[in-house]
Structure formats: C-alpha cells, structure tokens
Amino acid sequence: MNNSDKYSKVFEKSFSIKKSKLKKLKYQSIPQWDSVGHMHMISSLEKAFKISIDMDDIIDLNSFENGKKILKKYKIII
Picture 1: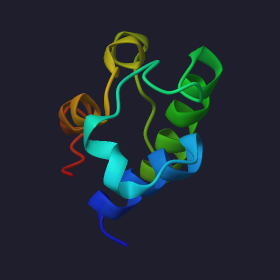
Picture 2: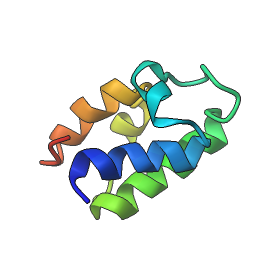
Picture 3: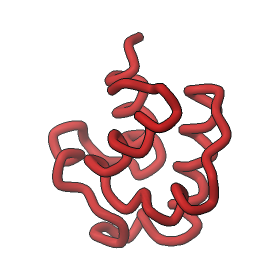
C-alpha cells in the first residue's frame, strides 16, 4: 500500500466515510470529526506512518488536504 492509500484509509476508517468524500473533509464538517475523533485519527496516522506528530501540527491538521502538507514536514509524501 502506498502513502496515499494509507493516508486515505486512516481517514476512511477513523470517520467511517467514503473515499470520494475525503477531498472536501474538514474538522467538524461531519459529526465523527470532533475532538475525540480527531485524536483517534492522529493516533492512527502516527501508527500508520511510524511518526510522532507535534502538538502544533495536531492542532493545525484541520482538513484532509491540509494533513498532506503537514505530513511533508515528517518526510511523508502523499
């Protein structure tokens, strides 16, 4: 599985959402992406990519698309 697939799967599983809806997905745009869902998704990203995400980046990761930019800081290219 490539990085793009891994990244999408984390969001699909964390928020029970179809892949076709991911591109426009933003924090609190669906009921599942609340503060608890956010931390679950962050934990899943950390496990999937074997990284530790800084607190500032956890806060800034507020959309599916923005998350791709943040992961570049960790040398993860989506």
